[in-house]
Image (spheres, one colour):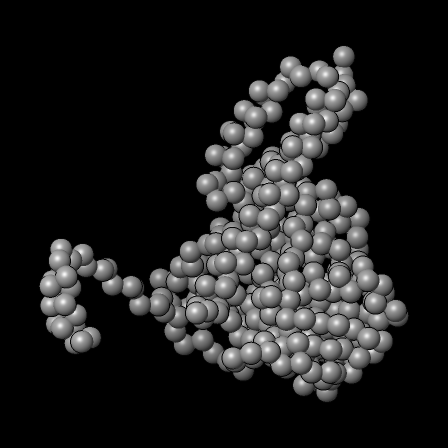
Length: 275
Length: 85
């Protein structure tokens, strides 16, 4: 009952948006593009909130790393005027969404400019590991991966840095005092493991059904506290060892052909060497 | 003149408006229909009837939330998991 859960949330380009590569192939276009919380992070938040509702944990803390862009005021206006929140949907809004879903408080790790562009799983896991120690967390729940870089590394790296056990790709979690029973999604089936807390969990798609952050709850979440820290305060170096050489669009899918008769179809298939 | 349910109706409208921002056919499409639906019942004064209509609005909220969830779930499933046979 005294456990504290740290949940990592990432702000990514919305899943429904068509991604465009920048003309200079250094990355993807993010300006003026709708962003939202990474869907796997939503699942992680939901799981943490559920544990709290079952009174198995005491506090849920949502953490996110990123720059401090616009001011809060702009966002308030945009909600009221029902304009699409594009520029205004800043990182704190992602934390706010987690708070609206039921997290107790938020931590915004301020990373901006060049550091933010190169921020990868290693840097984030260092930050999370440092925060877990500072906040005396017993459990870290993360999404298994983010839908923007698809790295699927942060949870594993965090567990390694803290030397904690990990339950990755969780599709079912049961907590019994300081033991966790985790059903994991693995190739061709499910695996059940038992690990001791403190531990790191990463959420798979079927773990739960995330609740919707409704407008009244978002308004209420404004009263919850978000503290801002810098990686330096945590003693974390966020410099990257990776260099992005080139970003390419996936190959275009070729248009199909319509055939009139079965014979045509057989002919075409023979032509393509399929039969 | 003002009904004690006025606040409740306002809240419902605001909540629906907020949900409409993610509507697949666009927020404008949603907003127009939302407004029309509310305007159609603007002359209703019977508290029982208003309550009934608000309940219907709450039901629509639940349906929208379920639809958004399913839409997201299906997209992710298609993107990240192989077809099941």
